[in-house]
Image (cartoon, rainbow, N blue to C red; front, side, top):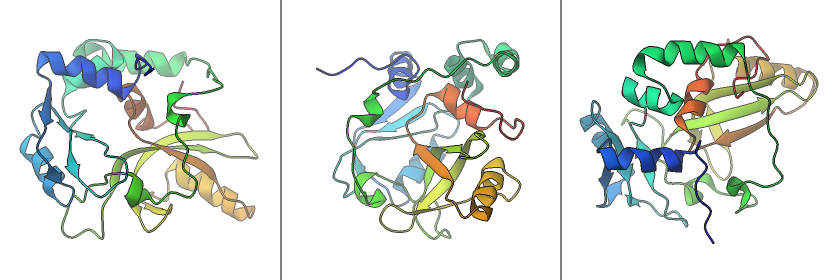
Length: 218
């Protein structure tokens, strides 16, 4: 039996967009090599775009969605408020964070693949001719420092470089880079998870500039 999507999930958010015409579904095959990027550029000021059948050789025929947060009304919808209340809602969340709620099992853990090849499992578009390859552009990186317990949620583009490895573009002053350098100095690897298919509220949280160690997720 399939589970109903959690209210704060991308599936639930997309399902709410469609009835109001705020999401365009492209049923025809679209090439990952520049095709997805071209469609998103053409619809830059329009609705979110859902590609039901991107052309890829991935084992799992997964859809692709883009332009999810290219309009302030969609930001507000993701936060459950009006456009004029976005800043107030964000500041209130920072001032009164909610505690984490740990669960024993989650839908994202239903299928586990040991030593995956990213390009075999995920439809990853290529956006620009001058870039070296395809990029995951909305992968949220959750990091944990084993010693200090400091955490960080951030967003960075990831370029697969073979197997389960990827190049991550991080500015030297970003907190993820600070945590990575600290782990390296101790001879350790920084523990991270890259999450895709996130609800807009989580996407927005990943873009906040808080203090080092301040948890963006609550």
